[in-house]
Every structure is written in structure tokens, then in C-alpha cells.
Image (cartoon, rainbow, N blue to C red; front, top):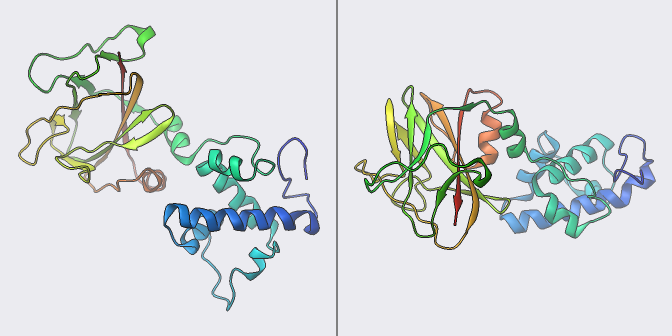
Length: 248
């Protein structure tokens, strides 16, 4: 093992990899329960290949006897997507924070112009040029706000809100399950009712900086979770819009 960077999978001996491999198996098992996702689904995603069709496909993994490349990929997948949790469970195995696939997607995104924070109740548009030190359009607790997205073509949009380092899906319709909306050419008010009427949003508790990401796919459908979006972005052009608010 490397003292400075967790496990050196490439150079560690078979014996040195056994206990870390067992830990990876335990973590994936716990994640399966925690996320309510079948173990094989997580394993396939983590190791980037289908699960073996052998009679006992997980026996060697549970015993800590898997190839170093599989170990490396599973380790990195957990570190990218569940680092904080994994560090609490196995601090020696997870020492160096990674960027999640979602963070990497946003870092590589070419942000588009055309998204503004607005007042959906008709009392005027919130400042598009907020003081730089506030980090976004300034809103008061309980103040109504919404978004106006100017689209160059038809498509679909999904949105996410970040606060305190955590990302949450932002419903764009009348229910919490309405996580995406169809876009028309030109101005689109979001969120909106099924009849196209703008719906107000309110922040009642969380003062401080908020970040919003709107992902658009022109002429096609979008998934609603960020993991699927990051995968889709590898093969399909997606357009990313950003807005920030500061709630006082």
C-alpha cells in the first residue's frame, strides 16, 4: 500500500490487496441497501463491465480475490460518487477527495447565456447584475422568484439546486415528481403549471448562496437524474445554463 495515496492497486501484491478488496465488497453491499439499488447494478456501473454469469459471481470478490484493474475501477467509482460516506466507513481506504462525475460534467460544461431569475408574480424582473460579493441575485426569505429560460429551439429541460454542498432535483411542474419540462422556442417561464402559467418558488429557511443548473437537450428527451445525464453527455450534445441567488 502507498502511505500517501490510499492503495497503489497497480503495484500492491495479491496479499496486500485482499483486505482492501473485502472492504470494497462490504461498501458496495452497504451502498446497495442504502440506495435501494441491486448489488449487480452498482457493480456493473463501478467496474464498467457486465457482471460475470458464473455460478458464484461474487464469491472471489467477497474473499478479496479480484483483479487489480477491477479493484481500481470500483475504488475510484465509490470515491467519485460517495466519497464523504465512504471515508466515514473506511477512512484508510478513502483519504483523497475526488470530483464526482456530476462535478466533472459541470466543470467541462460550456455555460449558455439565456437564463434569468425573475419574479413570476409580475412585479418586475430581479436584478440580472447582482453585486459580485453576494454571488447571485439577492432574495429575501419568503420572496417569490422563478426562472426565465430563452431557448433557441424546442427540447426538454431538467434542473437542479445546490445548497450547502448538496445537489437536489428542482421540480419544474405542479408536483414534486414533475422533474422535467418541454421547451418552446423563445422565452420559457419555469417552473410552470400544466397550462403554462408561471409558478413561484420560495426559500423559507435556507439563507446563503444557492446555485441552479438547468440542462437542456434540443430535439430529444432527457433523464431526470444527474448520473444518467452525465452518461448521456458523453454521446449527446447538452446545453447547460446557470443561475445563482443569495438569500438573506
